[in-house]
Length: 382
Image 1 (spheres, helix red, strand yellow):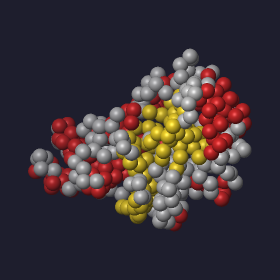
Image 2 (cartoon, one colour; image 1 turned 30 degrees about the vertical axis):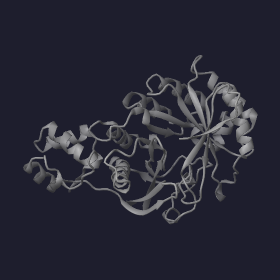
Image 3 (cartoon, one colour; image 1 turned 180 degrees about the horizontal axis):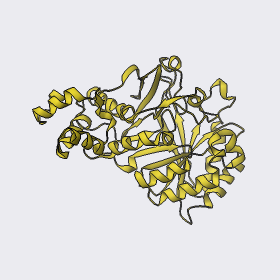
Image 4 (spheres, helix red, strand yellow; image 1 turned 135 degrees about the horizontal axis):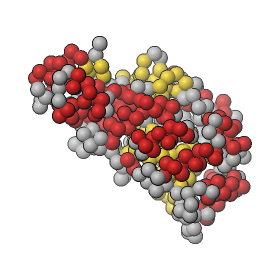
């Protein structure tokens, strides 16, 4: 039985090569061929010893995920639907910007957290992805984009674990994938440019801060336990006092001096000025005197099962101004266009739904409210 080399970070690949009687430098060479050059054919790895290539042909492979569908929006945003077997599929989205290229990656087929406002969660949970299935999304996307854009340089500069699933519920498979993303012999991404989004699994947040402290985004969505219990069921296990303390601990090791709080704006549910004031009280109780967090306000993408509505633009701006006036950097994420269905919270779990061609677009632009600013918000691409 052959093994998929995408399942290994460099240490894992080194162990695999040593098991075949090869030295570490051979693993480094192989790792570079796979991830830096995107090569899957061992015979094309010209500087590997012929004897090693023969060993690899009988024991290993580099197997990407089959692409079920690909949608390219009018602005260059691309969404892929990948087959992970057993009737399951996952999605990844590439968002091009002037100064970066961001890939949104899935960590699970479906999601078990069940946030009320997320259509992916409403589709249920199937299984965790293996390390190779996580990294294969990046491996394929980088390879495709270089060809598509006629580029010899790296196209993907940022990776966000914000696709389908709760990454920290798949910690054992996530960690080697993160290490591969960061490894200079592979994709060489900065810790500041790799973000893990979590709904708040406190013990795994602490583990991540020690094992691989990348940028952290926390799906907050409510200022009180009573409200968050209804929107994010995981809050019943890890209430806000524990979550916020974990965020404060994470900051000691984080590559950035802030943590991002994601906040989905729900009409009449969590979008009133009083909710904003409660958020201010919540975050000011932590982090000392420093400004240690920023808020990303996300317009809700409605779906029938939720029973929820999107907050108006006017209400969202009022909410954002309350936070901004308190000295908290606040952004408002805006979706635009109608090309492809890849907006936040809309990566669904049913394969038939997810193979529909063309409904909404993932490209984002952001209104940035600078703390204590007296001028009107400006539109800034992110």
